[in-house]
Length: 341
Image (cartoon, rainbow, N blue to C red):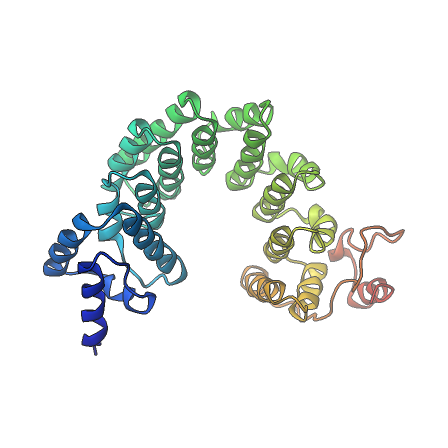
């Protein structure tokens, strides 16, 4: 049953050029025709700052709750005069599979004067590239999106846009992609090299394993983060030892990503490590470990091993306890881990 008081409060806030309370925003999900007309009228009168705050609030809410459907409003935002509003609107459409969006996103990618908007458009086109690769959309819109991203990667004046275009293209199995990634990895700008490592994981080709492994030890936390992600996407068993070390990285985001990657790769050491972090004092690491365990069980089955890694592992040891855990039986693995517990 609808809460009429909450709905009324939301419309009153918009009519008064204010952002509605967060608890009322869900009423903007799945607007019907008459409400779309009312919202459009209110939207036109909102000051830029209010439009920014509202679009961002809807974007955040949609990201946290997949049942929220603000796509009508996000599409409206694509044509806004403010670049920040356009950017949030594009980011809000990251799961929209309507191929009619492709021409709009390409227009923004090619014609928008704002770098952030063009970069966001490239990122949003990535899921259409994936859909095309999976043959979930027709070849023509797929190829149209691919060609637009290829032009952006090769010809946009801004490095950020070229980076995001490469990352979006990485989902494809086109022959030229390997060369594009290799060239990007040799780029003088480290940000482009970081995107190349990101693309290696998304490309899911074993060819990239050695490069990704090397970058796990990069002094740059952004590079370590992307190499960690790519290790998981590539399923690199040889990366497990380094990933366990990275669960104790100085950067919390790298720690979380290392836990995720271990869940993707699987194996006895990965599961023991994740079970250890389920009891971490850090709530973020607890959650990351729990989610990674769920992924591990889904992808690899339940190994029925519930221990943990070294409580104070410092990354240095004469015992190569991670080497190839599939070659160890439970007792051998437990004996090897016991020294660190």
